[in-house]
Picture 1 (cartoon, rainbow, N blue to C red):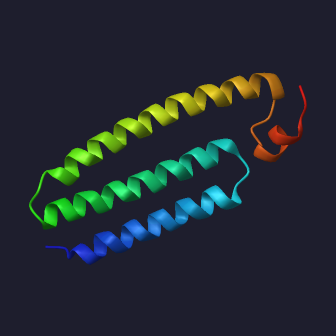
Picture 2 (picture 1 turned 90 degrees about the vertical axis):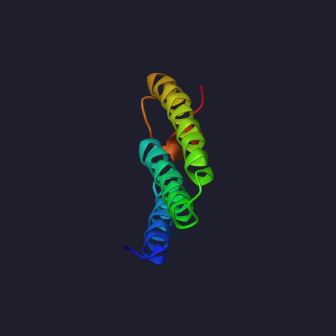
Length: 100
């Protein structure tokens, strides 16, 4: 059996990579993928703790987090496609500086 500390460490590493991706990347698609990585790292920790304490509550919460993440992706990509059609770029800095 794998110790829970390994899962928590992996979750922390994935969350850190997601934060770094959000803070350093300028492409909106990469930012969305980094946010998804952060949500999935939280899911990994929730499932690990649910398994450790033999409770289904953490796994039920993961289901709701996945639902929210799917809705976020749908709305975010719809906005991104709309912005790309008018501005012709996915660079966050250029989207903020372009007028019209």
